[in-house]
Length: 133
Image (cartoon, rainbow, N blue to C red; front, side):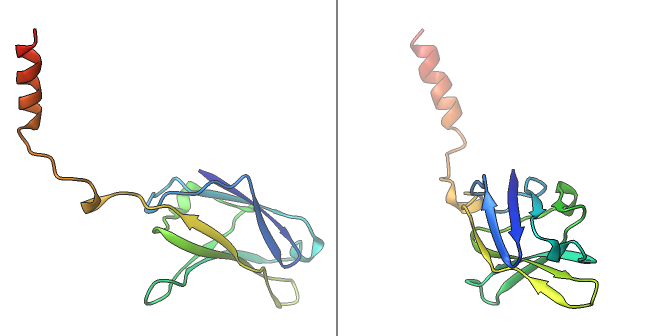
């Protein structure tokens, strides 16, 4: 799943974004279009993901290379509402940062949320199907 972002000065906004599913590794990719010249001289750009509702607060920082984050970065966000900021350092050494964009990561439904199924249920279904012949 690719999330597309545009950056205009200190404003970050998403276009064509879907809600990602939590704990998916190597599925989330990001591309960024920097629309104003203030980011042209940035010597480094980072995506900072923050989950404020967790205790302690979770933070995940990824380097943006060639205006993208690829599957090789293994971005995996747990379910919840994450805040994304883009942070850079310009040629003068000054830090530039965007306002946050909220990314709602849906529950992945893994683990104990699936109901337990008796192991012999398959055998019961086959037996009923054979009797119906």
